[in-house]
Image (cartoon, rainbow, N blue to C red; front, top):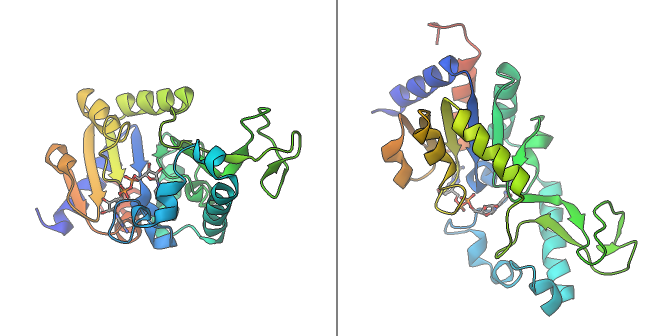
Length: 246
Ligand code: NAD
């Protein structure tokens, strides 16, 4: 299938869908200057990221942990939503029942204007204190103002459980979706690997949009290979058009 035909088919699927779920991963934010994990220039090539990816690393090296996560927060705050984020927020305005589920912790979909984003791995833009339970801040140089201990970003680190309520909402949305669009994720780690399967098992159709081929492409009705920041605006443009005019 050529890219043009795949784009038309994906547009048609979205246009006729009643319930759309868009599941995004790190590839969506790459054009905003935030590295992915597994690409050649990804975070896993960064020794610091490997050293500070577990919650216990806060006890092992408190200063290093805070420095690493504060730098990541600064990078996220300096980043801007790219045309991919803006297109997804626009899709939600065109189709308000659309649920946006993301593995990203950068908050860029919300900053692009999207509503009720299900952030499966939390947000770097929220911090919390695991010692006294304070989640509200304010944080004084990343220390808890209530107990003085070091705060940590409200993200799911390795070895930690996902928030059950957020995960359940994402699973229900996937099961109820008739079109599930996967964007910029290798989709190999739970629950990324599971949500598209839940959509498929309940009769939903899958669209994959990724820079490189994915194992899941074999289960997809439409496969788009390319950059999210280029393809999503083209895809969403068609959804706003009256039927038959795309
Ligand atoms: P990943 O790094 O495993 O995979 C990203 C995928 O995106 C790759 O398959 C790559 O080919 C593709 N990609 C790269 N650039 C792209 C582009 N411009 N358009 C479309 N696709 C592109 O990322 P993942 O599957 O999201 O899993 C990594 C985990 O790391 C997630 O759980 C997430 O929480 C975390 N993470 C988050 C951020 C962020 O918040 N922006 C960044 C890095 C990692």
